[in-house]
Length: 252
Ligand SMILES: [Ca+2]
Image (tube, rainbow, N blue to C red; front, side, top):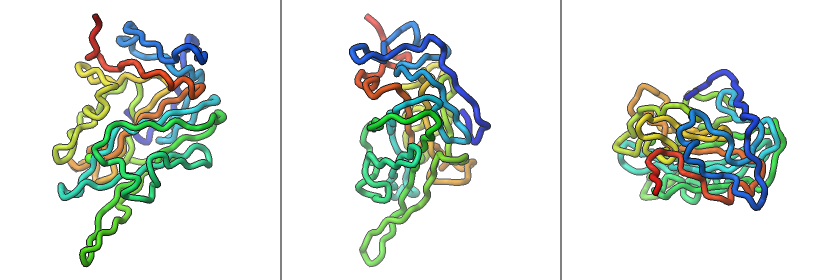
């Protein structure tokens, strides 16, 4: 887990698998589940840096962004809408509704994970960052309006952002006001015994805190928006379902 950490680089092993259109990119390998580190299952052969919070792949890439969930309440009175956008180089994507539309773009709706796959490939050195906004309700004379409560992005270095990579321990932070914890929200990517995160080397999970800037507060539960970013060589690599990442899977 890092926050505002110096730049570091992840390099894939030379044994990274290749993706051919007719071959699944994510080949499930039970033996790999116990490995300390996993190669790319998405045929992305490069590495990436995270400088501050900003992700920069070093080879030509495409990516899938998977919103794992959003959980934030205004003092237990109502669920605050959370909106999202993605910047790739100079291009902005708003795949789940406009990020300035508190209602149409709301991700804090109790819905499940949702995916967006970039429609193009980008050259190495192109930065990938996410933007998240929580919205506060104002009621005046019976008329409800929504105003930006807080926006956080991963383009720089923010104390409101934590990153998880393969092998990191999930922060033991309870969800505020009975909300799901971080661990519950990333449960498909965590060994429930060791609480280690299981990701491929081409992946990172962003944990975003939108409610409080007092990180000692119980309100700072870092699951106001939870997003998994996966790099790939080609969008065809996302056609196959991901293999299980936690160790609760059983085999016949
Ligand atoms: Ca929360």
